[in-house]
Image 1 (cartoon, rainbow, N blue to C red):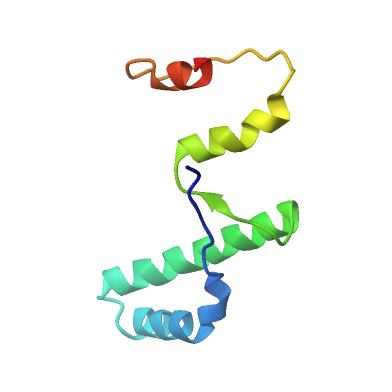
Image 2 (tube, rainbow, N blue to C red; image 1 turned 90 degrees about the vertical axis):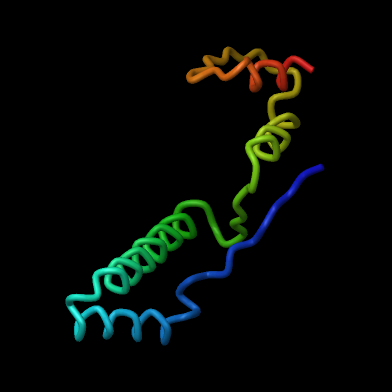
Length: 98
């Protein structure tokens, strides 16, 4: 079962981001709001970079298994070598072997 999700483009909520930014400026002591506004801008920059480098039809995978499943067809019949770091009970290796 493949689970995918499409994230809403954060640039669509410019009014909300502008409001958070204003709160951050006006209430410099409210670090939480300021940090959230900065994080939102960082996410917008990242999404813009993804769109510029990988095109319009972006979607992010929810689980690692869905990422792996999307690679199965591309790797079919090819010889690959894999290094697994941070192995926890060999989960990834066992998934690929099955």
